[in-house]
Image 1: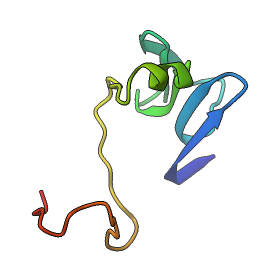
Image 2: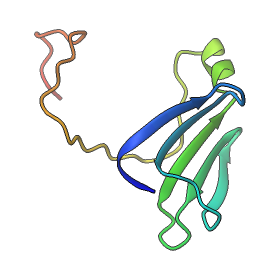
Image 3: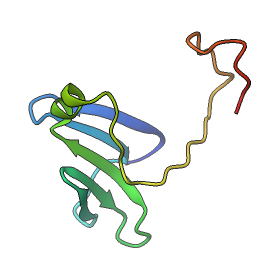
Length: 93
């Protein structure tokens, strides 16, 4: 199923973070980008439709940040940001 919004979920049993735009399906191609980071792609367009980050809790136990080698474009479909953690003195990028 195609989604307009990105879905982020955790498979606690498998310790997998899943970021998806649609459900997986048999025709998707699968590629391991780097150690334990797997993407599923549309077989016709090569567009990434699902990302699986294996051993997710272990990654964050050893570091607060890790990179995923994917170029992403984020487009909001919502209203103005209400991030209370950002300082009002900080200019917008």
